[in-house]
Image (cartoon, rainbow, N blue to C red):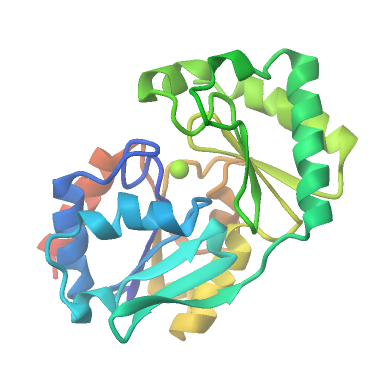
Length: 252
Ligand SMILES: [Mg+2]
């Protein structure tokens, strides 16, 4: 039997950038009784709390000990110890790398006409430094879900931006994720890095892990996990994930 259930977050556990539903929260809490549960995503730590941890219903410390947060694609790892979340490791980008990536993505998006500053809500930003990665969100973090879904449903805009970024700064990797996002990282700092550390930190083998993701196609930010040879379930949305989790819990 699998020991670890690992999950992409946006579009796998929730609608992008919104909290998980009570149903997903309930299913995850049931899974915490049987498995180590590992969300891994490009988000920041506070988003893991907002979207997942704070949605659990009166979780016990015992349950939380089985929840492992692999933040910023697993380049940061937090676990619950002595009543609080403790950062176990962190591999940040340098200031120079952040500056170079930010400049590159902005230039690429501007050249292609996809730099939509005018659509941002007050105080929002298109490029965000997430410490271990830099993230481009075409319409900002605060844009409505509908607008985000409509922006690039076939990934064509982001593929064009990524292609141009690779010409301008080939020393970085660029991955398409979420609904409007591109994550820029140093090579190798993708989910392979996160999943490799996950195996090490939890002291398990690849075969012990089942991974859920919505971007498992080549170029997607879940694809590196597939390439590692970890068993993967491709979902379209959190409803698919709920369906699969009910199935897993049903045969325990
Ligand atoms: Mg996703």
